[in-house]
Length: 265
Ligand SMILES: [Ca+2]
Image 1 (tube, protein in one colour):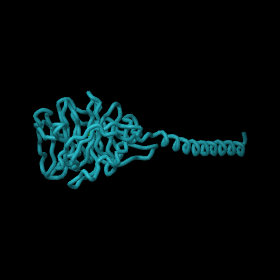
Image 2 (image 1 turned 90 degrees about the vertical axis):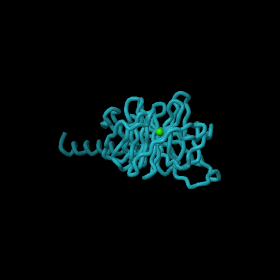
Image 3 (image 1 turned 135 degrees about the vertical axis):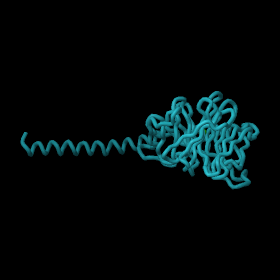
């Protein structure tokens, strides 16, 4: 093949590649976004929630709700009776820390702080502080999949940490059809997926823990009816899952209610 023929073949192949990629990316783009389901909700039950609780973490374990609250000088860890909303046990965290997500791993409760670069570890039953650990990013949400701690930092990054030494094992980028989705906040691990509040939105993302791709959206618009609100409230935040009874709970910062919801297609 002479040089001219070679150049022709190369440029033909390149243009075919460009045309093919261009078309396939458009096709994939449309078909993928069409496939991402958006779920609505049905309210199953409404429970009272402390309107002083700036919810940053929510967990359901062995019949009780556990909550981590935020704001400087007002952050705490709580054990709550679901039915009455009564705070059964509370531990204040030092004034200079802004509490964030919590998760329960075995007999330990792990609580992140926002910009404090420190996490606290408590005995689940006594709330005694048993350990602390450091991390070089903001702490937002945390949950666990039975093997690793799963942590968000307010960006599109989710990290998987070794639960014994808090070392990072791997990370994923939360994305919708390749576009990173930021403000990943409170987390919950539900039936093989990570559920995440998106800060300042009324949506929860369902995330594939293997690659960060969003497999569904839960639209909770209108969940909290403003006519039922007497005091100032903040955004939707807080997801807890009762594994034994397959119940999903959501609330928001300073909200007067915790809602048990069922997803509907
Ligand atoms: Ca949670």
